[in-house]
Length: 309
Image (cartoon, rainbow, N blue to C red; front, top):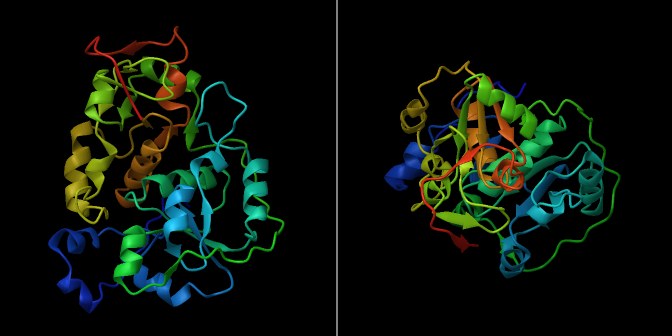
């Protein structure tokens, strides 16, 4: 079950030597998280497949030995007029099969951005009922710090047949129509972008206009990690304090969104897997889709408009 949270990983003795914020972040626990020490022990197991979820340029510079590369564009449905929508099951099957991933493999996904990008792939796979997934706490930095091998060499790939158990309900996603209905039912809509994006001061590439979904509230996704430190998750106590600003119970309905469903997938992970919120959904289309349609209600606090990458 996606809502089930298992016991905390054992804190090893070396943790006492780590910086204070890293020690605190080790307090969070989820069956979907894996630390570098544990990955070191299973990295060479035949059924372990490590996915480097970064741009190809970063992968070519260095990556975990044996890791294959995947990026956002590989898991997007390009049939839409706007970008960022999640790929179909058939597309995921094709991508994974071409990477040599087998149906029963355990996927360990890492990035260098506090698991923001890796969480997007995790969330898509959750929608398709594929749960053999782990996210590497601390990313490639933690791997290197713990003596893990990195390389510039691409591993040999032998194509396979990968199959998903299809889940047509997409129970962790909401459509723009469902978000529109949620506005009338006083569901909290959480915008996980930066404050400047939320207020309409900046328009990120891909959006049709600046602003936010009407009556949404803002908590930047990056508040959940030590963004200016090791980019690991903050402690449960700190996370609880941050999201208490929502003023809702953990059973209340909540919709999260961002620019294209990536940062909000990270917040979805935090809320459901680390804090135990029971009724959270991620709006896949997010602001990129919402801003495309002029008849959907939106707000912004400024007329100033600058584009950022």
